[in-house]
Structures are given as C-alpha cells and as structure tokens.
Image 1 (cartoon, rainbow, N blue to C red):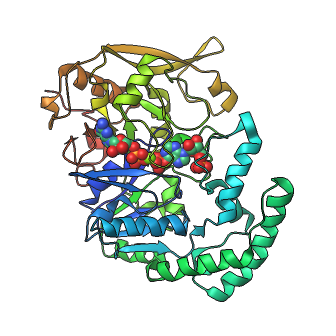
Image 2 (cartoon, rainbow, N blue to C red):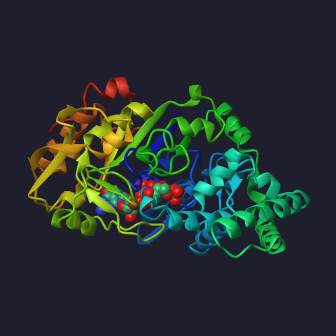
Length: 443
Ligand code: GDP
Ligand code: IMO
Ligand code: MG
C-alpha cells in the first residue's frame, strides 16, 4: 500500500489528468487538494474525452472513492454541470465526496477577478477569470463562505446578506459594476446546496479512516509548481499551493502519511497567461509544438505559450516537491523535430546560473543555455516498451533523467490510456533510492 501525491512539475497542463487516471486503477481513494475550476484535466478513454475541473480524475473507476478536499475552492454551478455531464456519459458520481470546509466561489468572486484583471491592464496576470484569487483572498481575510455554511440555509442567508452588501460597495465604488441582489444570490445558492448536500462530509475524517484501513490514496494536484503562490513565479501564479506540501494542508493529513511524490512534466514546456518563460519559442518551432501538442487551454480555450524543456525549473520542482520520480508526457509531440533543445542552465547578468532564482526580477532576465540533441523523426505513438523507442528518443529521456537527477517511472506517448510506457510502477515498485541507481533502463 502506498499514499502517493501527483503534482505538476511545470506551469500546469502537464497531463496530470491522464497520469492520475492511469494510477487511479491502483488507488482506493483519489483526493483533489487545491485549486478550483481554473483547472482543466483531460482524460481520454477509448473514444470518449472527459474534461474535469474539480472532480478528481479517479472518477472514471466505479469503485474508487473521489474526494474534493478542504484546500480547494468550489464553484457549485460549475461542479453541478460537471456532475451532470459525467452522469450523461454514463459515469456514476455516487462515490464523490466534498469537504465541508472547502470554500465556495460566489458570483462576486468571478466579477471581481475579471474586473481587477481589466483594471491591471498591462500588469494583468492572465487569470482564468473563474474567481479563484478572490475566493482564496476571502478565505484569508476570513469573509469566505464554506460548504458547511452553504449546507445551513439559515447561516447562508445571514452571512450572504452581509457579504453581498459588503462586496457591492467594492463592485460599485471601485470597479463601477452593477451591484448584486443579495436575495437572488441566496436563492441561487440554496438550489445548489440541495443538489450537493448528499456529497458533503468531514473529508479529513474519511481520509483518516481510509489510511487506518491501509487503503491506497492518491492526492491529485492541480496547476503546477511554478504557479504555486509561495514557490512559483509570483505574482504570475495562482492563489493556492499546488506543490506536494499543499496536499497535506489541503486534505488534512500529516506528512508522515505520504509515501511518494510523482512529478508530471511535458517533454517540452507550456504556459498559459502572463509571466516570464525563459525557453518560450516565438517562431515556427513554437507554433509546431502548439499545433502538434494541441496546446489550447482545457478551461479557457486560450492558446498555450510553448517552448523547450527547461531542466532548471525541472530541478527546482524536484527540490520543492521532494520528487521521487517523473512521468514524462507528450514525448510524441517531438516526433517530427530535426533537433531538440533542452535548457540546462541560465545566463543572467553575464553569469551562469544553475538554480531557479527566487528573485522574480532576476528570473525575468534569465536567458536559456541550451544543449541540443538530434531528433528521431519517426512516430513513437505506438511504442509500448522502452525497447520500442527510437535510440534518440531513449537518449533524450536519459538526458532528462540525468539533468533532473530523478528517475523516469512513466513515459506518455499519446492521450489515451494505452499510449503509455510504465518503466517502473510508481505505486507498487521500489522507492526512489532503488530506482535512482538506474535512472532509466538501457536496451
Ligand atoms: P492537466 O491539466 O495537467 O491534466 O493537463 P491538460 O489535460 O490540461 O492538458 C494535457 C493535454 O494533453 C490533454 O489534452 C491530454 O489529453 C493530452 N495528453 C496527455 N498526455 C499526452 C501525450 O503523451 N501525448 C499527447 N499527444 N497528448 C497527451
Ligand atoms: P491545470 O490544473 C495552466 C494559470 C492562469 C494564470 C494563473 C492564475 O489544468 O494544470 P487563476 O485563474 O488561477 O487565478 O490564474 O494561473 N492557471 C493555469 N495554467 N493550467 C492550469 O490548471 C491553470 N490554472 C491556472 O492561466 O496564468
Ligand atoms: Mg489543464
């Protein structure tokens, strides 16, 4: 039995949904620990594509219990739409549980997110506009509404009447927006409450019970390490903690419970929204990556910025998350490339820099130092073992493992479940100490 955290090792959209779905086969419980409907996790099963925003990617396994943890922020409207869509596609959502202490995204959060982005102008963050920042801000400011309040009509009425009036002052005076009608918001959210009530529980207790019964628990992160509020490229980050440490706080378990941490990284890099991105490619190669990788946001449809793999941020993700191993996704997207570059270090102010600088202004000045290797110029989509891979593709993976100083446990070569090479089973296989003696087995 193992309790495993799956995190994004870059700027999000690494393919966490696919990897979580794969690993969910061996999990009894899958828990989302942070983020809200800013996330978009795509899972492809045969000819069906599922786009999940809040519901853990384990939902497609009927016997797996799925929990939306206390560190998430829940937009009930979007969650209910997601539940309805899954049910329509024949997926049972009976096993979904929602933490009663998770915070609720309200209409004023969405409006404030969008209005403040507009006000910021050229300083905008490029948020998803889903009200994530304002919901977490209210949590910290202690004016938030939690699921437990939503479940209690009397408390909801009292709290919302006061909060909507308070937010209306900001909406009208600061942003010149139409005020909200408190009663209309209360009526709307009471309907959501009735629909979600059967799912709402004390989730930390449920997870603790599962731990006591020696169940396998998978903790699913949203976003990625470089979007972390504390450890990412601030201020161009999200408002939660996607890093592995966030899994304990966002679910209510102690760190001693965690057995392993798996980092998911694309074989190149993407980023949505604003902020520094040293390996970004602006020309034809960037476009090629975007087109071949179908790099358009799952949640907002925005075109993702694309660039080469950055091993400096990769090593940073290993350090900040204590990664045991990696899942490298979208290797197939590089199939057509004549040559592939990897950023091995930065040059900043005339000096070589091997580590991610925590000083944001310094990071914005970093220029990549590349190592360039030959491409393999053939399809990898049907490879199912390391032996099936072209030699140059295997060399590329070995180089990534060496530069990141952690072994690769999974290689993904397409969106569907079977387009995967499991190098070492990251749940049942040996832990890092054993794996790392052999970063990636050779032919
Ligand atoms: P997440 O947010 O980390 O779950 O990632 P997204 O779902 O937002 O974006 C990843 C996209 O790449 C999705 O459309 C996946 O279906 C797709 N995908 C995942 N793994 C692979 C892969 O190995 N190859 C290709 N071509 N697509 C993949
Ligand atoms: P998944 O889970 C990629 C980005 C936004 C913006 C910044 C802040 O699918 O990997 P927010 O709405 O959170 O306040 O926006 O974070 N962002 C993501 N980028 N993948 C995501 O989620 C993201 N969630 C937020 O584009 O730059
Ligand atoms: Mg995504």
